[in-house]
Length: 304
Image (cartoon, rainbow, N blue to C red; front, side, top):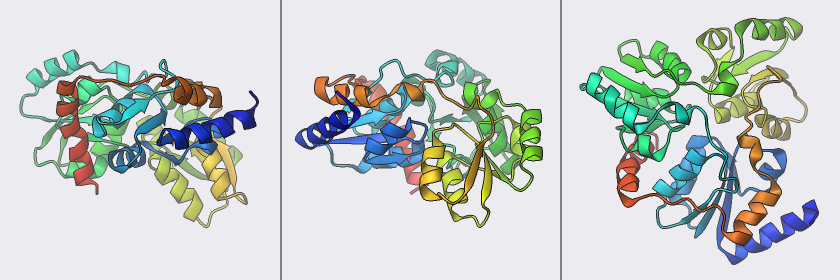
């Protein structure tokens, strides 16, 4: 099938199955085009918790589809590419977290949404990059064990010096590899451009940014800004929405290495096959769902 045939079939099956397609902003352009909703982890979590579809086709990575299943356990959740994982999420296991909780028994445990369902089940509350600060501020305890992203945790820690945030040694392999010297060179090349970066970048990179924010916050900032040129410090998939919102503005990717290979695995063909063959369905045990749902729903309550 050619592209148009795939698109037509996807639209037809979506209606027949009462399905909805959600896509993260890091997905390929053609996948974002076919999606009903495109957004960051927080926006997609909110949507999955409240939508009325029978089936959710989640164009993202494994932990995202798991989160959708936790928030909507009665629905069928399909992940078009079953091997689309997240190296950061793999940097913390439930077993390792249980050991850390023994070491810090008085600490509240906060997990970045980039974590497995089993890890979420061990945590008090979840957060995303767009609401991490609000979540941390809502916690009464001083000591907070934050997993797994050390860079996001470090960024938030600077904003709440009254908290003792214990960092896990995890990171996003895409954002973490960017070096401050590379960014400074980009700023020299484009001195009239505003630097917007994701908090998954290293602290020294965030320190020289003009704005630090989540995927959605970066997109919104560029859209609403009077500035015309921007250096973008997050995964290249956001360029699709940035250019769509502001075709008259110029965007420079901070580094050619800002590509998440797992996010780019999903294609129109795999979305089509997900609907055609019900692949790949996400199933979780009721115990994990019950325990992890508290973690996610607590986040949604804090950040209504």
